[in-house]
Image (cartoon, rainbow, N blue to C red):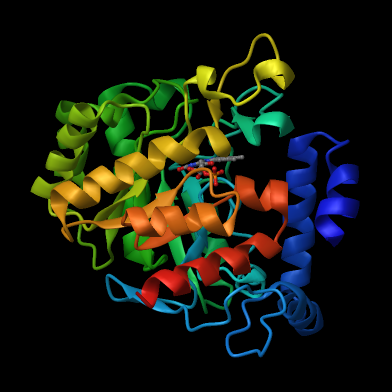
Length: 358
Ligand SMILES: Cc1cc2nc3c(=O)[nH]c(=O)nc-3n(C[C@H](O)[C@H](O)[C@H](O)COP(=O)(O)O)c2cc1C
């Protein structure tokens, strides 16, 4: 209520990137103090065992073990919100069982020219043209090594968004550097290789079977004891998508995150609030059906072979339930939290509990 009817109308008057940065700074600060963590957890946490499920809808046991990793709740913050790993102490207090930090890149990225984020409230979507703005893997490793690690950290790895890494060979070396450094320093519980960032130099080069093969052939020889997932594009036909899954299966990776932003602007529910000219991918509602369909087909075709993390357009507990029913083991979100507020996280966690009970 507080977020939806008081905070959101005010926040939506300001530039989305300014608000995002503000929230990250406030979140980081609140994460430093016991009292603010307790208070936020009291208001927004998933309270297993409470009689009436104050902020949680279902009040059931929701923890889950996936690929040997224990998640307190089956809902994670998706890559792109906490680029630099600054929210690790506060996110567990709002019901998240983990987060995907990043995407991180080998070198510092300044991001694409502004505006990089545009809200489309009528379509419950955000045009994202962030261009992988982040501090670079070494700075992020140093930051994460200093903080308490008591919930799941996935680290999303992309290639640096600059001309030097746009070439295929250089791009692969860029991924290899980050992946190697994270493993050497033993930072992160799982790794996601983001091959589907739609708004960077060189485009989505590694979304063809040939180039994905080249990339994975280099990565799998690097010693790694953690699960590795691939962040999938959602604008492919099933045959093309399945060709990528075959490569991922061949290299024995543990799973897939389905999926990234939607590049099909015709799928906006109401294009009237979209600018005439825009670049970037769409988050939120326009991703929902595409990602759920691909999750379902992947599960039907491969059974339990892949861990599936379902993401895209989870704007309500019902949307999350659809993802779990389609076959997702875990879910991630960003846009739903922006449009509905942080209380959505506990509701989504509860939706996972319902499925676990079946
Ligand atoms: C502001 C923003 C930045 C994003 N940056 C990344 C990124 O760096 N890496 C990545 O894999 N996905 C990125 N994404 C995509 C999200 O992780 C997610 O796949 C997508 O937004 C769909 O989920 P949602 O509908 O819950 O927002 C970004 C999304 C948003 C909204």
